[in-house]
Image (spheres, helix red, strand yellow):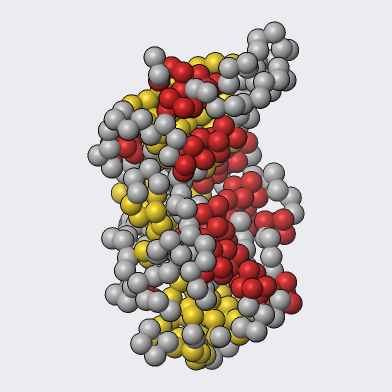
Length: 443
């Protein structure tokens, strides 16, 4: 069996590592544009902020390790044509310019995603940078040394993490987003208000409800960011406005969502039986809605890549779907979410009811007891749990992993009140705050 794999970050590395073990007789070839594999882009802001000192820790594999498994690694090779009828691919060696031709029995698309780059006037100016891969992270670190005013465009996870890193480095930081608040895809307003207040107390300028219209420069370098509502000095601009799936190679050849994300079934197979896909290039079942959704997360990617390997020869193990579970640590605050928020439920036109619990993470007789805010959303008709959010200075984010399991298993909110959780004063209360959400909903 001849297997061709295009791309090797989270999903690709997980796929080939498992395929090498499961199919030792297979001929596996990986095509990768970069000179590295498996970069943890979710650690990019930690690297930029100096929390991670050794960048090698941000890679969980290497071309050499994969070669030792018997995999042929075509590093710095750009695949530019896939013939799905003949099952052939054409690539270019980016170092030598040589054309490379190959055939496959099974093709695995793990091409990931790429930052969205809006057609903004002046975006080509020097020091307007993207934040995705290892080389971009190194460029940001180098350019930030001489920058006094830093503007981050996009208030998602990477954007707010970079804001924290730059503020801690003593920069004047402005955060711009077209939405009315930060992190609006992950948390409802009562949670993001807490983070925004913290940002403003630290001197970070928030420019919400503003759209960048043009970048103005001097001697080829950016100096000013102009929005529909103001202008901001900027020696360095980081674009973090979202990601799009890298799927142009298969456009019109397999089924996709409107944004280009490849649709896969529960065995990671595309509409072409010889092609499988995993990671940020594809869409999978989103359990709160039961429909395909594009949720580019490293956790989703490694699970999907592992399942590709197991299902490549025959359907073996189903993907159980995703809740889009994610977490974030910003300054002193720990936050996490899973499934639908009230905001996202409105976008899906889904009716939800929510319970909010405000408590301390452990008894007040302990030396410290931090406030916890938990919100659980559910279907008022079926009572099925659909989403949850938490924020606290204490690290109670594992509660969201628990609620992710509840959503995945179809648990009803009333059952949540009586789930068996341990009690120990160092860690929690006699009635866990998760239990309290279920109890309150049942009243």
